[in-house]
Length: 540
Image 1 (tube, one colour):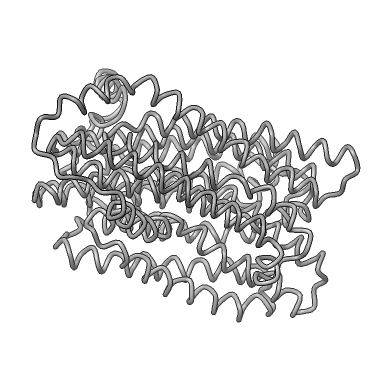
Image 2 (spheres, rainbow, N blue to C red):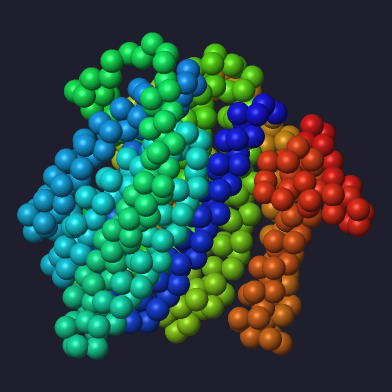
């Protein structure tokens, strides 16, 4: 495996670690928030939530991937001056677009609520998010510049601080408004403002990091004696926006799909005879289920962030083997993560809901169905990153539009029928499935990539099936003796152990994979030393 591929994998792992910490904080945010404002309040909070997740995707992936792609293309040829000028221009463009987005949310709140069919109480949550685009745009510029240098640490660090601030301010304001009898809708708005507070803190962390590195960056810029092409503002700004739009949409697959739920679910439930309050309550259950789905998606977002500049670098060097290595690793990552996540969440849907939300544990059937879509979501995102790195920016957008139309049609048909809100989960399975398949078709077309079915699919699938059986058996064996909490945690722990052992036994993970992860060499040495298992080469 090439040095560049190893750098890409390590970068993705760093982002994954930061993302996991951030998601753990977010999960702890949702749990007490549910107890504070109940399912109805979560419904108010959840309605504008696709806007927030879209902005987060733009800040974490869309704009950073765009900037990192353009910057990495320059840095391959050691053109530091051009790379820094692109960052400066990006910063100006994004502040301008961030201000416009914030003004739109402030001034267009009533129009958005009307067009989306949201209940009027959702306005507080929408206004709570209104200032965040300005800071999210600034974060996007900084993250893209550092990621173009293959430095993922600033993004991961700012992500953690952003989530921490969101939890503190969001919960604090929700508690204050509930204590002062301001109402559930206002409390939901306070929780939404946590996202704005998080964006402010994330921006401050990135600014501090940039200032500490600025002296070295400027030194490299001044030492750049190579012939540099003059970088003009308007062409650079136009290219950034032209690329950023499809990259952002592609990165926000989950957000765009959720928009179909946000626009249709409450309407169709009311059409079927539910009251506005009942429909909002049921919609809130989708939000609770999404909390679990979003945790594995943290890893996949890190994969996309790393794939775009990495694939772009392989294309720039015209290195077909390196390109195929990275596509294969991205596909393996998706399967190794998606299959066990889907199986675990599906089998333990009700126990996990009860463990986390206690008496507010409705929505397990939604979670069980949504878990099936996880494999398709992660594969679709991975192939989106590949296509964007290859310069095929608008192909994933067209594929996503087709997928959203499929989901919207299923939502419209099923939600108003006997399946109710579960129809939206089925719509997600179909929509994400269409998206992943279409993306794979185009990746294969433009790269001549041939998937190693045994390594990429069959070995992870076999490992997942055994893990699922053990998890199911352990939970139901312990449930009658220990209660839900201990039996669920024991089942999860056993499932993780069995899955890891099976990956080693089947060769789904080989020796070279251990060299890619932090402290992996030591772990490999330990496994061989104690003879727990003979680690196989990945080529087997």
